Amino acid sequence: MSQEAINQALSTVKYPGFSRDIVSFGLVRSVDFKAGRATVSISVTTNDHSVAAKIRDDVEAAVTALDEVEEIEVNVSVNTGKKTPAPTAGPSSPGKSPLESIKNVIAIASGKGGVGKSTFSANLACALQDLDRSKKVGLLDCDIYGPSIPLMMGINRRPEIEGESIVPLENHGVKIMSMGFLIDEETPVIWRGPMIQKTIQQFIHNVIWGELDTLLIDLPPGTGDAQLSLVQTIPLSGALIITTPQTAATQVARRGAKMLEKTNVPILGIAENMSYIEYPDGSRNAIFGEGGGQSTADELSTELLGQIPLDPSIREGGDSGIPLTKSSPDSSSAKAFLSIAEKLMSKLS
Ligand code: ADP
Image 1: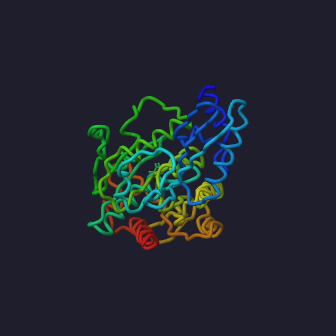
Image 2: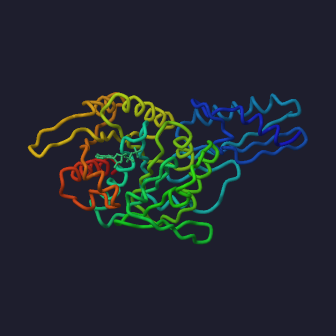
Image 3: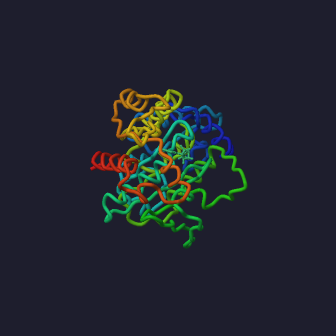
C-alpha cells in the first residue's frame, strides 16, 4: 500500500470545528508504512487539548479503516500557543524559531473587506512606535488579496534576500513585510487553501524580523484559510477586530471573531472605523449608523477600544505613504488611533 493511500485517508480528517482537512492545512508532518504498520506524525498549534485528542482519534479511525493497516501509531506534537513549544513526539524542525525574538504578535482581522483594516494597521503600527520609541514594531501584510501596506507605508522597493530569508524593509520606524513585495501587481493571484498556508508559513518563518516588541499582522478579510493557517503557524497574543458601525460589517466581524475564538485566540478588543464625520463646527454625522462596534464588543464579551472618524486626511495619509499618526500625531483622528494603541498595550502588559 502506498503512502498516497494513507494521505488520502488523512485528507478526510477535518480540523475540529472547520470544514478544511488536516492535510491541506499542512498539519501532517510525516507518514510511514511498513509491514502493516502505519506511523503518522501530526503537528498542531492549540491550547485546547481536546482539539489534539480529537485529531488523534479521527486520524486513527481513518487510517485503521484501510484494509492493509494492521497497526497504527499516531504522534501528535502540540504547540501550546505559548512562546516555547511543548516537547514533540514526532519529528520537528530543530533550531530557534524566528518568532522567539518577538514579544507580542497581534492579528488585525475584519470580516468584510473595505472596512479600513489596512489603513488601521498602518496607523496603529506608527502609533505604537510613537508611544515608545525604544520599542520595535513590525507590520506583516498578509492581505494576499489586496496587499496595500507598501503603498500606505510609503515603500516602493523590494526587500533583499539573505540566504534563504527575506530582510524586511523599514519606514516610519516600522519593519515591514508584505505579500505586495513578492507578487506582480499586474497579475491577479488565485489563491487556494494550501498555497495560502504555505505562503503564510514562509512569511512567518523566513523573514528576519530580529528583536520586536510587537508584530502586527494585517490578515486578509474573511474567516477562512488564512486565519486558520496563521493560528496554526504562529502563537498569537491576540486579535483585534476592525469593523464599521453598520450591520453588514458587524455581522461578518462577529463571525470572524468567533472563528478566532474557536482556535483559542484571545480577542483583545474591537476598533470601530469610519464611525462618524466631524464637521468644522464640531458637529458629527454618523453616516454608517451607530452602535455597531459597541454591540459587537458586547456580544463577544470584549471591549470597544475606540472609534476612528471617517476623515479625508486618513485616506490621504494612506495614499501618500505617510500614515496620519506619523504626519499629524496631534490631530484628533491621530489621537483616536493613539488612544487605541495605548489601551492595547495596557491589555498586553
Ligand atoms: P481594508 O484593508 O479593510 O480592505 P482599506 O484600509 O484598504 O480597507 O480602506 C479602504 C478605503 O477606505 C481606502 O481607500 C482608505 O484610504 C479608506 N479609509 C479607511 N479608513 C478610513 C477613514 N477612517 N477615513 C477615511 N478613509 C478611510
